[in-house]
Image 1 (cartoon, protein in one colour):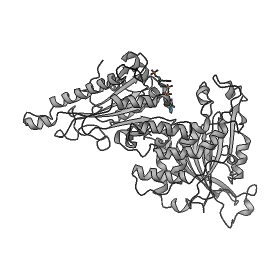
Image 2 (cartoon, protein in one colour; image 1 turned 180 degrees about the horizontal axis):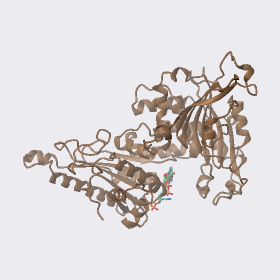
Image 3 (cartoon, protein in one colour; image 1 turned 30 degrees about the vertical axis):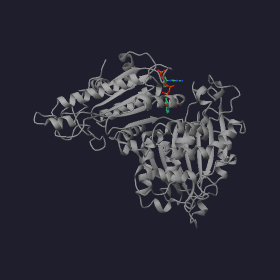
Length: 563
Ligand SMILES: NC(=O)c1ccc[n+]([C@@H]2O[C@H](COP(=O)([O-])OP(=O)(O)OC[C@H]3O[C@@H](n4cnc5c(N)ncnc54)[C@H](OP(=O)(O)O)[C@@H]3O)[C@@H](O)[C@H]2O)c1
């Protein structure tokens, strides 16, 4: 069934045809003037691997949210592509399960701009190129937009024949979103290049790829080389979905738009920075896949390192994507490959409530040495950060779900309250950005406990998003990143040189672990991780604050000390 090209986005009251648009400049996606001149434009978003998990759970729901909010440009069509033989209704049924809205009508309206094309990911020798069918479908959609446009008010009877001729081609922009295992990226990209690139004047083609981008420096570069032979860096959008998270995006604003933060943000004041990622569940059936990667490749080398760059980078010259990525790259280049002395790896064993050990997961070899937990310490050797440990901790099957950045400040010199210390330690200020759960920014401060005595307590200056921004829907990371791709903004996508620098930091350690050089410490499912990780953290200078009751986290049923 062909999708109906005359469908308007929600709230659209004007003519169904449009000439030039930009989702950024024209967020409603509607023509700003009925007299727009120029070529008609349309956008086809092809989700390759549309039958898979990521497409159903993340990509389509994100596209739906963008479409509902009017951020998807006018004349957009969404094509699902996969090998699975699915009838269109069957495919839509699978997608529908993950689309959330009180109005069924809206969901159906969105699904009416979606279509499904079945096909292979690589051509058979001597056969037709496997994406030629897909290309024909896209061209047909583009032709319909053109015909539709010509038939509408934009070509008025008074338009001269010469002018009419000028409007003979639609500008057909194309996004290919690879929701596929990386093993098929090279062949799929070659097929896109061979037969599915946009060819109309003034149009663009963008290709979105998902992590993992290789397993180490060599494999990542091999993949990069094959993609770069086909597309320019401006056409490639490497997603690290952590860069689309609301509070990660807020880091640049917090750091560079607040006068009181900038003078403190350096080695003179900061004792250490922790970036923590905790999951309360194990691999749960995905152990076969995970065993090849381990926690360092899964979250540290990409998501957490990207966050670290935003915490550590210098102020960029401007907010342009490349100025920001240049500063992140400089941070990465100042980090030496991680030393094995500064790493503790762990693997979860059975838990106290009968939870399974990692090696009990189907597909995991019983002698697996894959780390499901890692604490590692890195140093940024530059003027701002020399000597400040960045402590990265990530683990599965831990005691809670949490992802946060904790910046711990140094002790106050000339301590007036020395006699009131708990266990001989001064409580330190901390600046905490919690990405999940419950996005929150808070500062830990030492205050006088209310009452007649001069007792000290730690309290928080807190910005909890769910109470402060109650009526604001916080967009999902994928929504923002797809919108950025539509708008051609690569700020939150990883550039090739960043990827090279990131793999350079971790490849020697990963090779050492893969060769069996580091036996993971066991830790019980549901615990805070191996004891040795806490010992490492303390050795490099982190201090657990012991003063006072932590009211905020009691309120949320969490224990702030257990990280
Ligand atoms: N799932 C997530 O939440 C998530 C999060 C972050 C990143 N990612 C990344 O996103 C990509 C897709 O993830 P996913 O979980 O959606 O993967 P998936 O479900 O395993 O695969 C997606 C689709 O690709 C096709 N496919 C699977 N294995 C293939 C193979 N060996 N050769 C050719 N085609 C194959 C299948 O479609 P057909 O057989 O119908 O063609 C499948 O439906 C991966 O690179 C993954 O690492 C996923």
